[in-house]
Image 1 (cartoon, one colour):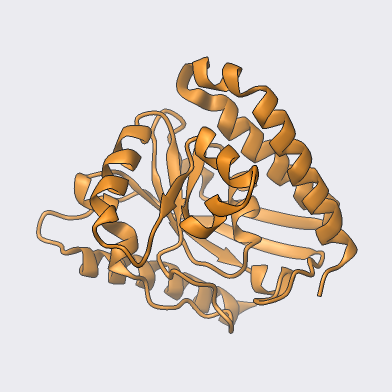
Image 2 (tube, rainbow, N blue to C red):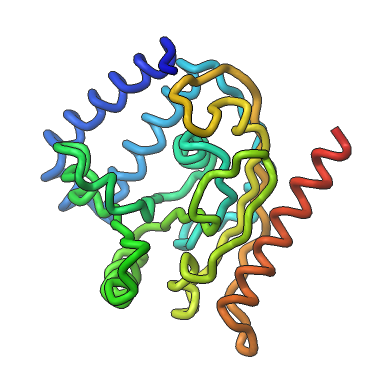
Length: 235
């Protein structure tokens, strides 16, 4: 099902793609390539206003604007991306599934602006992806959804350790919990509804010396899941 909000949002995204292509030379030579983060954040905020989605953000004090992060969040709908990008004041890109990069013009624009494709079925490509992301994290943060797929019931699914491959390089992890987006956009639907969401930004962390990636995935899952369950029970 497609509604008016989705149609308008699609046109806004298309407009930003055109602007991004025209301004790419300025982005490429800009300091820290911050223009990409500005594009993503401003487009996301416009989409929220059009769709009448409001958001409460807690934990902004846990973000250091001079640091880059590996942002790990729970996944409720495809609307997670613009909501997080609008809420977090950092120069951020996304680790996205490779299928998105096959969309004509849109996919090429993502590559130009330092988004990185992830091939979940090809483990050999993980090393190449790791090196690419490590290089880009010198100037921007990356968003990843360790669940790998969107939840269908609002509960946080198991975090896959493979999604946290970059953490072994010692990067700074920023855990983020999202509540309410499963009601804004249902799984399998393109209808976008107005509503209110909450975002909790937790203190940053790193993988511990004696910790495996699997144990890290469980620790992050428990942190985010326990917060969401506790918040839901108290509301």
